[in-house]
Image (cartoon, rainbow, N blue to C red; front, side, top):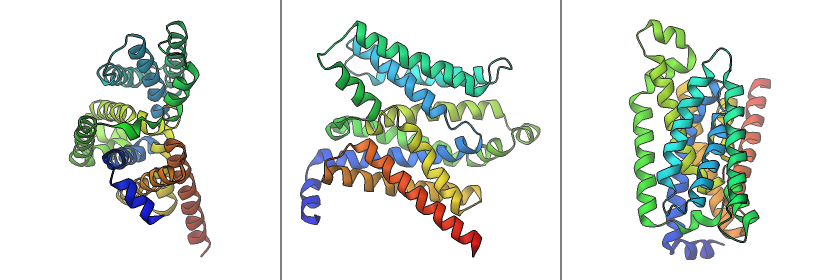
Length: 279
């Protein structure tokens, strides 16, 4: 198995996939802790459906680089979700359901009305559950992903204290002079960027798992925000690497294998946390 793995590592596309997978997992875990604590974890699910709709539009329009269309539309939708969720008539969960279901239905409708290939079901399935496109990344796409990921990590580190304050107590943050709305908007925009980056890795229906499971696993063992964030990042990277290597060796779907690794690690952390409580 080791010799087979070393053989695969000789191919640039395998190395590219591992680099992108680790970067996406790291960024997802950092924002995941904040989203879970703010009870807004399903924003990832909503934005992933919006990204699916945007990909459908780009496919119908035959846009060669769909990132130019998908990223702006997803960011705009993140802002709308935040603004609509603050509306007293439409709360956050209702806004997510409204925008996500509408985008998902619109995307599938467009792909049916204006089919661009004979294998419509295959195109939809690969978009929803991830595809082999993670193994066909070019050096340019890897560089773009690396730049966006480094920006996300840098913003999180530089704004760590304010994000911490907004996560736990917005009213206190406002009274301390922290512009909570601005940082909530920043969190939403960063989440949108991560969702778009993760589409090729796990697909639009599995992105929430990449955001939620590492944070929940870390919370079973640690309790401070800093410890949970660090542990979540480590677990997410390990699951992404383990899942991708397993998928390459066993010829299984990359996205589903990564999520399965996240689920397994969650149950292990849950068992460890339960044992610590009874000890």
